[in-house]
Length: 207
Image (cartoon, rainbow, N blue to C red; front, side, top):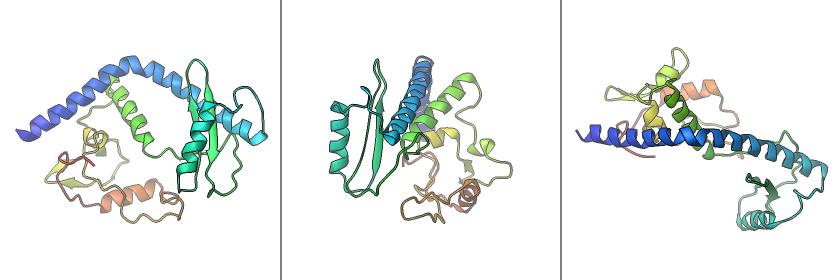
């Protein structure tokens, strides 16, 4: 009974998200397209030294520069605010090596990708293309072995609510000093999943 109530609560959270998505999706897609364009334009302008009204220093530049100055981690960031007027800024911390930015420069977005993934899944559920109760194995490559526990499979609901029981980092992860995922491809992912043993029941712990 407790497990059923827990799953019902998680399903309601996702259902609420799906209900909101019918209004959010068009704005979200348009915003993301504008954001992507703004970032590409920003990086290209930075690389060529362009000096336009949009790239002139402003309040956003000051905020980004202040935040970068406060970090002890060598890094460069680019920020875009998409509204009635698009604003963008970029900065590098003192410890970062000299960086040349171009329109093809890639920036790591980290855990922000979880939000995008959750929105895509909610949209797929709304369209009937997937169910939150689908086992993750159903959407994996043929023959893939995913971890189970107590006869229960990991579902898409478990993944999107971060209650799958999977560890934060996969086993056998061997990357570079600056990027732990640099050498981690799809084959490595499925090998890691096949070698993973869950330490607690699926759907019980948020991680």
